[in-house]
Image 1 (cartoon, rainbow, N blue to C red):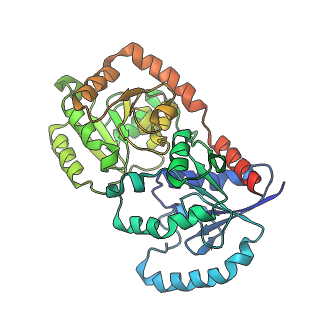
Image 2: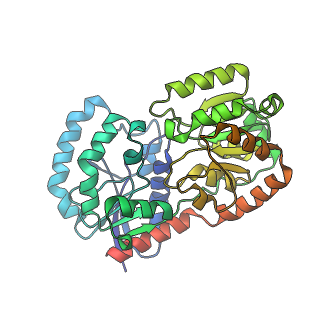
Image 3: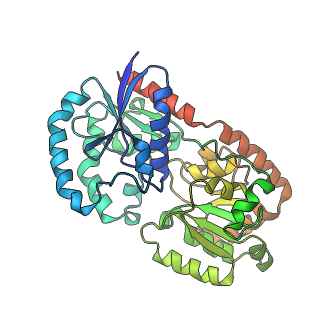
Length: 374
């Protein structure tokens, strides 16, 4: 079967989010899957010849540029006139929730329902976008992809969608995430004033549902000698309603037990993972939870919230906690840092669980969904 597909790449930008990473991996790997005849890329009203340029801060200007808004409207109108002809015979995949009006029968990926479950954690503009366009995209979709079986069931119940029209296709860690000897990562870590096994790590957007506040309180409650030996490093973007979290982080930074690294360069992130003594991910709602998988693939013990899809995705390899119970959370963190038998078992199990996921598998299973629709 010969497939002609259009992939939307509006999530591609220099600092990749989880959805951006997913879109980028598909953009690279789909053309390599047997049966794919052609793949074109679409972004906010224009055709993209080279998606890699969207990852370059010196690349083409993006549509968010105010002086280009009039051109954006004009091009969207022009594309509306010709899209139907271009898309005829092609399957459109919107990996970021939405399908254009001319792409009926296509595929959308619904990563999670946080905008409905936790609307207070999203900016008003994004809420309006979903109010205007999400239901129409669902009604046009021939099939929905989710990142986990947990989310598949949730989406089916929430949307009243037949489960047979929803497929869970798991994400994966990049091959760049793997165990590394201390000597291989020490030079890079010195740029952050860190040493291998001398810190704990949390990679997360800083926003309420990620439960960073609870993590900070739990870390503050650790014995002084534990906090001093393993300060907490937090890296990721500053999300919605993050001011209070940052205030607490600033307090911890003054006391020396936490540091906010913001975004780190793409090439440094696997090294930062591999050097961590512990990875913590207390988010109470995820569609997949890619950072814990990246940590397990890096050979690092993992602690996650016992919530949403995280028990499914970590497959019994992670320590499960209730972040809202700050006292118990703190005790479990101490155990995860000092209990050598648990740590060794967590590393071995985690490598096995992470090894079951791959971006090649994700691409092949995505193409299997396309074949069912063509």
